Image 1 (tube, one colour):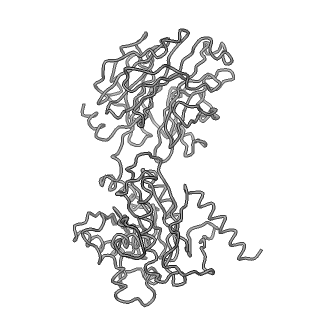
Image 2 (cartoon, rainbow, N blue to C red):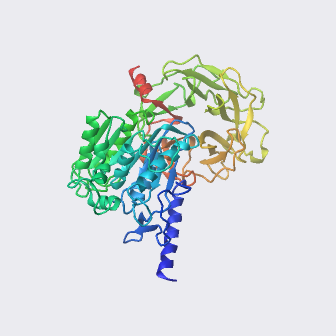
Amino acid sequence: MSKKNIFKVVFIFLLVNHFNAQEKAIKLWKNVPNEIKNKSYSQEIRLNDKGQATGIKKVTDPTLQVFLVDNTNNNNTGVIIFPGGGYSVLSHIKEGYKIAKWFNSIGISAFVLHYRLPSDLIMQDKSIGPLQDAQEAIRKVRRNAKKWNLDPNKIGVIGFSAGGHLASTISTHYKDSVYKNDAISAKPDFSLLIYPVISMEKGITHQGSKNKLLGNNPSKALIEKYSNEKHITKETPPTFLVHATNDKSVLVENSIQYYLKLKENNVSAEMHLYQDGGHGFGLGKKGTHTNWPNEVENWLREKSLLPKKEIYMFSYFKGNGEDGLRLAYSKNGYDFIALNNDKSFLEPKVGKDKLMRDPCIIKGDDGLFHMVWTVSWTDKGIGYASSKDLINWSKQKFIPVMEKENATRNTWAPEITYQASKKEYMIYWSSTVFGKFPETQITEDQGYNHRIYYTKTKDFETFTETKLLYDPGFNAIDASIQKDGNRFIMFLKDETKKPIQKNLKVSFAKKITGPYTKASKAITGNYWSEGPTAIKIKGSWIVYFDKYRDHKYGAVKSLDLKNWEDISDQISFPKGARHGSIFTISEKEFLNLLKQ
């Protein structure tokens, strides 16, 4: 095989593997404008000395690499990423895919643009080629906003180095007519410029980027046109700038001049200059500049481009549940601190034994927190109460969900999942009904033989007929259901004593009422676990559970719900916390809770 063919095979292999890293890649153009057909000019992958891909060269057919967040709301923010590389290569991983994954982790959908790099070999006018791609990228994202659950008025750009020049170009030249287009605006709603090339003026520009974009002997008019600090108006989008003072490749004056012109035109702007970092640090290497992603996140949140910061709450009980509801909070989902000096917020009043075990709390569209719990070891119903603030609760109610099943032995670990589309709550729990499922009936564990049952309600006054939700073919308790895109995930405990299981498993369904798939293999380790409660944090599912024999809490984490990592040593919960549930509240709600 010739060297040329070997290179093609390697290139295709790398390209396929890179594309697999994204949700999908879509072509930007049906017919590329400003194009010169050149069969000898084809896309290449740049490799480092270890054979790892670090960039893309000679882009002829631009694409958008799509990284969508899992969110069904239609008011999400989207950002288009322009990797740097001096207009001669695209640093598509460090300043592309890794950035996209970071945006996903804070709830923003991202789109990495593989834009054409200016070349007289494939463009009639190379100075407008990247701008054409940038404009069409914004228009394409806006055209697909509904499909991708985006707010078309929350579409921004981020650019690194020469990609920062392109981001500032689209921010100042979005009205330029550089190709035949529809009426959709190409104006970004915000721009993030990270160690950007801004000016084409001698003494401040990055000469390599300038030569690639404008040629070796550009006219004064062309230099003026693409010195973007000179084209800022009061209509320029709000801007966030990051630069290292010791950047020797792209001088910090690029960001400073752009910022001063934004200020002069009363455009909302924020700039962070760091003493070190040099050039091309991406998400950060070592030093103060590594904090820039946190600063961007805060800025986006203040601009209402991100939801207000949420606080993670954990409802739990201690002992046998005699003294009632306890609450803890966390700002990171790992370290939980007890509220109210770890004392009860609500004393149990209903049920045979008047217990408040396994408290599960969710918030509905009505603004109320709804809670259900286990009231007794041997009752046929559950407890229910609601609250506006987690402190003042409604009169407690006993809901006899299993009263029609005369052979019911118990009703344990109820949970609630809310379906906003139907404005409906589903309550589900574990019960043993004597005589049912004899194939798994054994004498161990006192003869318990649970399955998962459910009922639905819109108002907690009237309820649908109780039905079987899930029979996994074994003694199952402690179900907890979460929505994941177009499917539902059920986390549950395999309670089988012979042969011993006592672990957590996962099942999936297209509808909340099932049918659910066969339960997975155990996702927890060589210990007894129960009471799973799950939440997605920065792209990873975290399942917390009660290591009840060890008298402490544990957790596992997964990106794909298939491969699980035990992170029990990374979390902390109040001492003695038992089977609870995690939910979130707004920072405002949390501050009000603290005041009371």
